[in-house]
Image (cartoon, rainbow, N blue to C red; front, side, top):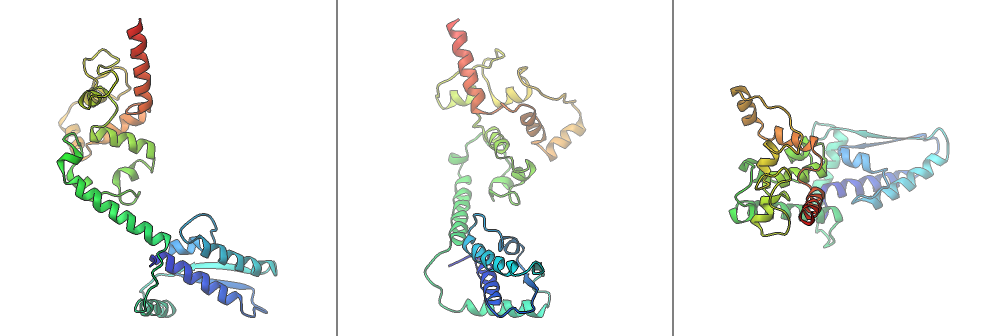
Amino acid sequence: KSSVFDAEMLALCMGISLTLSQEMDGVKELHVYVDNKGAGRAILDPSVHSAQMCSILACARVREFLRRSNTHHVHIHWCPSHVGIVPNEFVDGEAKEALREDAPHDVSISAARSDIIERMRGAWRAQAEQVTYRGRHLALPSKYWRNPSHTLRGNPFLARMGGDARLFARFTRVVTGHAPVGDFRERFHLDGPVDCLCGHAVESIQHILWQCPVWIRKWRPQSRMLEELERLDPFADVLWFLRMNPLAATFEFADYQAKAQDEIDRG
């Protein structure tokens, strides 16, 4: 069992190897056509990926060809699929015919990874439907958590943060109500201070975002237009605040706060 990417990579490797194993007298250029952009970029990339061995074998064959003469060149071309290009349609037909044959029991890394990701997302969706799992402090509309994704393309928040995993983790703590702040420690009976450094009785996410003088925040004029913009994009201010305050919603700041509180208690 393999993924489409695995099959494309294996086919490219076999095609390149078979072609360059023939008599190549007078041939100076090798042109490879592929309808999978990912496979086209990866076939001569020997770095770690699920079909790395195919890339290494293809690179070995291509290197032998290029070493024979400085005039030898290799070109990788992308061609669109299912638009009537005869050679491409022929290859697709051969691939569909091969699907009818008995598949081996071996599973490729890419196929195993795809299967694990799909199972994980299914488990996420099932758990997200339960209030006992997502809690009552989730500040996300259901359209965001009913189809969870871990990729830049599928996750609007991760894409908006430019793939910044640290910022995304802090944002997640804030909107799920699991940031390491005083009311969270009080709610789950955890060690650490409950009050805020500014003197407020309870350190909550709402207090940190909108009231606490310890943190940097922008001036927010109150108007109907602003309320409408916030309705359309309720997390703009949260993301701005987190970017301006790199320690907000981090465990590092919670440690600093605990040490500061300990020093205050000791006088």
